[in-house]
Length: 199
Image (tube, rainbow, N blue to C red; front, side, top):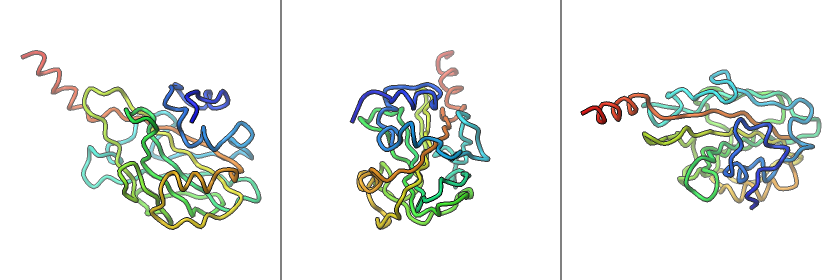
């Protein structure tokens, strides 16, 4: 895996960092496929680079995955794959929060908390949305929501690993796009630290 963020990807990231070199889109996407045919991903719950609401994170009970919307992929696409990763962690590769496939190759959306057709293992080995969790005092983490259009339907079973998914996708990406969100953890933690310093 390269330690360098591809030059075509840098402008699509708010603040390119070495960890971004390990993102799925850096490995499987390319300048010719990014945003091809106007392919785009967004969320009604946050704008590009804006904070995630705590209701989508580990800092709130009954938290769920955020809603997402996308435009139609290029003609000939057979399936869509969604990968959500955090590149701002101490692990040697991005932390996988969600790997989803089996999405119809057309304009569509996932509602807040909706269970996708097929979900693979996240970084904790579970087949679900891994709730973002940032420790008090940690820098802001950026979560990269990446959507891929493929030229073939995947035959992977639910619960497949991140590497198995990427191996099946390799060489079959017809278009890709991304959006980002950030999270800094609960504000009250910062207040607690401040109070401790004053005592």
